[in-house]
Length: 245
Image (cartoon, rainbow, N blue to C red; front, side, top):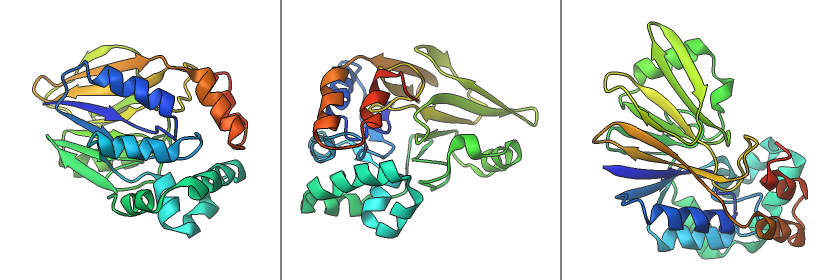
């Protein structure tokens, strides 16, 4: 089964549209979003509409959680709260109802999908987790693969001989081992923070255990100008160019 895994679109309609057009050419059977479809960008409502239109499976990100529970907003930095305010002012009631329907994780084809960290955290970042906790998590994990987002950086993590191994991912094809478990960070469609402004996503083939990392260009200037015009803090526009991490 070939699955396209996208994460952290963050209201960037230009990036999402380019990625989805690329996905359509890859003969995948399912598309799964790891959440944070909204926030930072100017088109959160339009992104949700497109996700629903294309029957993309989505789980709950921390930005969606902040829509569901206003108390979560206090966890956000001030600039992120300002961006979220724009989201709340422009989301339709139908989209808010959709967000309230999202679940913290999803399982398919021996894979677990979660926004932050397994099994169901929207808030924990992969880089916050100690090696000991990672080893414990892999031991408890029933699935072979767990896909996460949240950090906006592509990464592969796995245990071997009682140690944790971790490395950044680039545009590449990787043959993974059938007898090993992995946590794979899918990077970000709408706001990469790895110095490369292109939109990133993954294709996972469960029948061959091969992972493909794909990078897609899009109209960054248009997406950035929309952010500025919407009154969202300018740094989220500057980040799109890759100059500000």
